[in-house]
Length: 336
Length: 240
Image 1: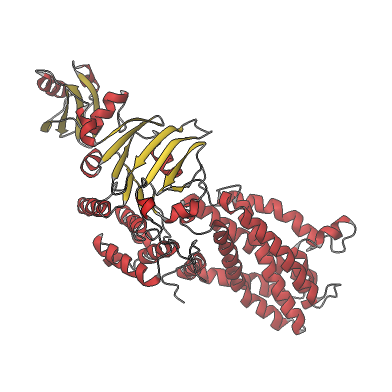
Image 2 (image 1 turned 60 degrees about the horizontal axis):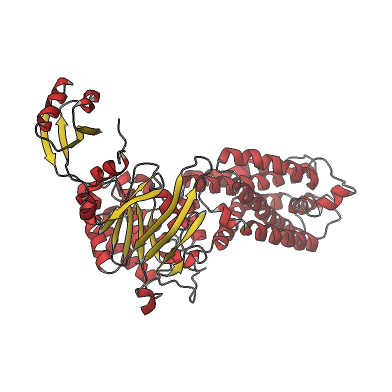
């Protein structure tokens, strides 16, 4: 019994579906998408988005800003209340299966069939996307090798670590050669080497024309990987542009990163003149502040007064997180 | 045909069924443990038939419902639904493979029943088919219930609420000689045909014929499966 139930002779081939006309269309185009959850009243509204072929587009925003909701709509998991979207010119509301065939998807909390091996899971999905047996096996062998998972490919997924599960989800998203990749927090939980491998792969895929939309709050990742980025705040796009453009909007802002030997109560730091926000990240305190003479000394004095033992200190240029803070007055990541 | 690398949903389910060895042993043994002592005892045939019927109904309904809700909760089924596979074909595969796997579980016990209670071949075939039809119907009910809840515990509750009246109408324990409306309703419940067939295997006389036992449940199950497959888009959508 063939699994593949595609539209053309029982087989989908997303790359083959392209025509010259389609190549001029954006890979992904969202028009005024709105979707609110009745239970919480949260969601997204009037979201416009355009991702070109070969472009890596970062979607940033704090928890509850609507990133995952937008990805759910674009992946055809849920229907929007209003608006619509197209994937390579194909309507995402009326031609769901065609759209699904052209997309690779990694959800925020990837799950697998735990009692099957990693290879069996990935093979099942590759075939579900219409890959032929030999091609699926070849593509998976290459990807398992690339992501350093070949050694564990025949182990049951229930023995995998969180990071290995994420890598398997990446393999499942990429194996069938999609035209558009939708990735939700793809690098969260990956070790350093795997993050590098993943980023290199994304750049390679973009180089071959694949459009990538990734939702992430890993500021460094978005800055280094994305050609464009957009901020979502309370369900709306509040800014969009290249990372450089976005960062250039923040003038006169600095971030001081203080690594402490031990955690301290840092509430009083916000009373230091010019300090806009203090965000703890592990053993680091990230202090967003205005650029004025003497502010570094004042911040250091404030930390010391709070009982903090500084083991490392750096003053950094603003990044996308600062842009978001400036735009919305809120932090990208949870504050304490 | 490779099950180590499943290329279809049903092969994936078969691979999972055989991958949990301890659970597999239990699944194969519990029908024998319940059915064989009953079949070997001297209790009246209608009660022996009822016990087998209850085991088949419970195995079908709870099996599909619980597995489905568990996969829905886990998010893996919603992920599968985002592939280009047809949702209706997916639900059909879920139903079919669960019914067949449940049937594999019950087969050894049924075989022993037939050895202990020899019956004409036509009735053995009819009874065997009716058990399979019951499993299809029960799995359809399980899948239908999964449309309304994502909690495996709720499946048990809803299934019990749905199955009690159906079991009553089928005449497993009470309502053995239905009349009027209950007699008409009984004709639409596949479990009733299994009950008649098994009673005959246990030596009781019924008005049913082997042809009716095969024909009517086939039609009813086809309608049930079709109806349940129509719920596929809702069933496989993420739950929030």
